[in-house]
Length: 210
Length: 402
Image (cartoon, rainbow over all chains, first blue to last red):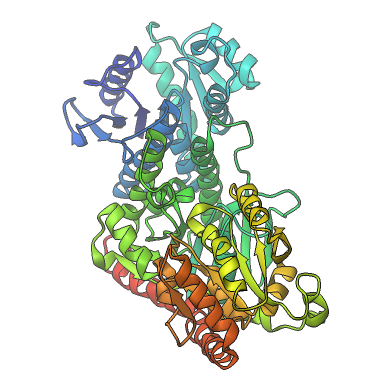
């Protein structure tokens, strides 16, 4: 199985809790014989680095340096994420089985890659705009929510880390509950459950090809 | 029917959605390309009442769901709209079995979508730069403007070729983004002179009387009433022109200077000699241009100057200021009169020369009409563009993406 992880933070760039989670996820996937790629952002470390065993990490920077909000910043960064992910896919003869996109930032890229190159994706929810912005509904918050909604709508599966988050995702975005997998990173069966979810997508993709 | 090549045009406006000059440009260009055996798909924003998918003059048009929630600002809307445009365009290209040769983007308004499509489908990207933020704003004064400027730079960076509509814009774009000279191509804008030639069942003598007395010559200005269009120069020229010839000044268009200008005219006691019409419909505009004894374009800044071409197509003699794209369109004493920019006396001289010398006026308007048929004809322009497409595809075929 070949998987690309999208995350806007990855060591050495640490913003919140996501960086360490994605690092651990990548290491465990590699240990379980998954060919693992990470596409992430870094301001000046760009291109490919192989700091972690068996993981290929690609860092992109923003082609537009001046921004007025994180929203505009994210929306011009996505094309670079697409470029790198498409390159990985072409290089592996379209053998990428799925993309696991962490939080909202790179959902636009994941959706385009799905539509263009038939790569399915999982949307892994760390947090939602509703909670980050304490229910604020300005045009800025609504734009981020619309991207999160797009992620829930276009993803094959959604992974959340708690039952509370599952209920919130169902409540806010009207997602059918059976589309969501609750997988706690603290559980002993964490990586096993993640791999099971990946295999669902793997079967979908390979059935549709044959 | 098989075509020589297939192009996806990305534009934020296409008729019936008309905001500025890109909409008619892409409309005529696509139509003429289709006649020259190029399969064109236009992907554009939706518009109330316009179908999501239709074929217009051999061009397949897809209207995407543009972002409709309230947006924090215009640029954020553009990026959000691009997210949707890219998503829908990706699905369209996939449904065409990826049988697309080139993506062609018009201005930064579709930069994100076209750059993303280039990379996911690995096809060459061509960009037409109609206007720049640094030119529109006369410099970059805020982070907001700089962000747009850098988005424009990004588009020109990712494009295989950058097309501009005048030599003036070629050098401006080259300067603004630091591009290598061989990346830039000049292909002029066109004018649909057939629209002016067709009989619209109007008695022009009768029509003329709505705007001027039979003994008055018509001096026509068409444009936004803003500083850079130099309309204040024309207003200042009114009394001096009237000393030599009886004329009516017809001012078509609107803008922030309108109130100020009409007060100026009233102060001169010449309100009966200057008519502000505001916006008029296309047919009225064409008829006015046909009736004009002289069409004046006194701009201080003008990337191209399409209004001069329209006057030429309407067989109205033109007086333009010698600046920007206008300098290239008009050859002095041959296809029109060039006057010094920002110089009222020079403008008065040009206008009176055309109005008082009928033979001279006839000569320049006939030459001008010939010129637009030769150079500013959409059929020829689309052939020039097609040869750029072929040149790019030839280079692409030798790249590892092919």
